[in-house]
Length: 293
Image (cartoon, rainbow, N blue to C red; front, side):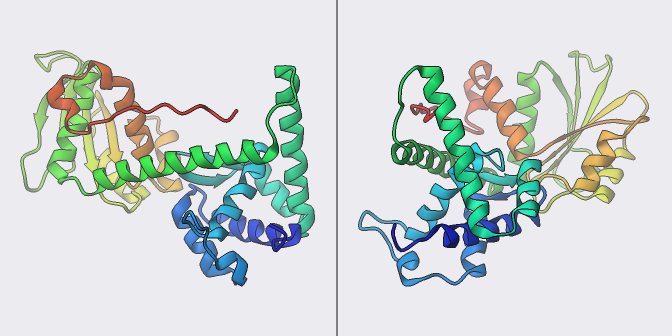
């Protein structure tokens, strides 16, 4: 990639960091890359495509972000990219694009050396290591994107039933399910016993919308909770920082927030024990890759 200098790569990385820093909860990789394309002016080489398919610019950025991940500046989880505290510090302390990128490369090499020493061998080349990392992350993003779209387009009441199935898998009993129409802020009521007389009683609100639930939305739900109730708010769009802080600092009402990623993790944990009828609500097939680390 002689056409792409270290300074040029550093400029792109800093532009990417600017985009991600404006989103404290992170962004899906595809959205971050799309925003980056709009923010920078691509050279003819960067705008080109590989014979095997795929835009060259995206591959350049993905390879460069491997350095940032191993430097501890960038976190990638289920296709979502977010800047760490160390990444924020590096962005503020290293304004020169080339120095910024070179520091990330240096930290990556330090990590690579430590890996080789632990294995008592030289290890793979940087190129093969990064290729494996990028291949794996693209596979994860593709799979996660498909699951995301599946849930986002699910019928609201089917999604409500999926949450009910998860609670049953966790050992709870569904005492009440909201019928179609206005639900008064509660979609499900679950209890730890089949008669519904034990405590705590769990009141559940389910939101399939892509927009994050704000603090007002959370407070409206918490207003439905009695002194012996526990609240469970499931929202595919996640929660704003204010809403998360509100839930975290609650003393009078207990409420747990479940976003898309947490819902998926819980579903995977319970999946082996779920009956086939419930599995079909979100059918999964595990595929194993050789990890690059």
